[in-house]
Length: 246
Length: 311
Image (tube, chains in turn red, purple):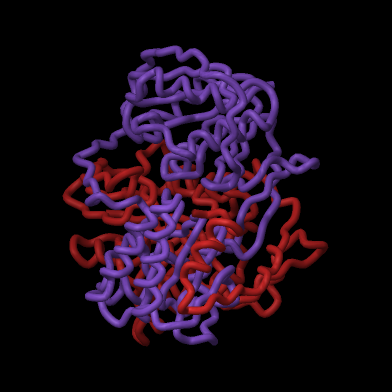
């Protein structure tokens, strides 16, 4: 089975979120990048578990500049077999998904996994766009994935319940909490990652459908109003009369 | 110019449906609702009150099959300027597909109406910043983050046209739908009571559930609590769990790590109950109670019950 896991870089959660160039770009100064947690903890680790149970070749793919090879090596250290970097700035979801879909179509993967969203742009778009691009079924925000032969059984939360669905391969799945648990790379994995193949290719097209005009930071929250622990009637009254939420 | 709104009409219409129709109405121009599902025409007609001019429901497609639904919508959007979805699990699957199919730019997770320059505000960096997204194509797809604008009634119910337009088979087979036992689904909840390690053990969750019942709220928890198995994974809110934006979020015994805040900072009002006055969560809270949850929560439940009987 050939599995393609789409990974993206994301700033470490403790990073300061600031903007530069007249608020038109994310300020990368001093920012430590990690593998986007949804891509790593759920999509990649589930792919590794499938590899351990039934055997699979796992390719990770990212669209980004050469600096992203650091996070790609980490994904290889956790256990992916090979890596592909599409050498371009990932500035538009359609652009990123088209580049990956073109590669996936050419190489013929059985299963394409993405995280449910990135923690920096939160768009949740790439999986559905790749699925449309390669004309495959897509199950979004799945929390469980089992493989049996050519069939996947998945669970996902829908309005008012959990839907259990079956799809035939090839398929695209976006992965959420519940599917797998985080793994820490060991020393052997880190050593092995240094020599695993990392291919660099160019995007097939440069077409972009959207762009970010600017960014802004949210207004600072006014300071907390403390309420006496013995006076919960006061809290209820504030929630009703002032905050108007009950 | 015109606006198309997609509604998944398999269940009773909720607030999210009224929000997207209100949003489309406020964009200006006509509003056509494209719906799929089994809901009655009289229930659907209600969307007219929020600004829909025309409602078309396709009875041949039920369920949540994104490929089928996207393919059908694509046949009916010629000339439309905006195509609007709720950014729920359906919108997140259908809108990206439609964007590729129509080559129309997608603004994912819009939180307000367009700015004068045509860009639309979205949440980025898990709620720690905003971005303004511009679409470079004539047709624009917008998925609206739930709870971003207030639904407004403007007119009367409108007519509903039923059509039978079968979609292509997409290869997804629904085996079953497991219904949770009488709880309110977290992403849709307007009120949420959440607790963390400060509760000391899973046996102490009774008072959280009692408070949630009194309020009509959903229950949630922090990541450590889900990881050690005190509570189910689907209750975990935070960066790597579910991100929610209820009207009221009550956090009990949760310190407020940055990863937790990333999942709840879209809440309109945050109440924090913690024994530690230095807990970082107080900095993100609107109301704070420094005290022992085991005393404060029963007292709060009692105050809520008293309030409910007098209102």
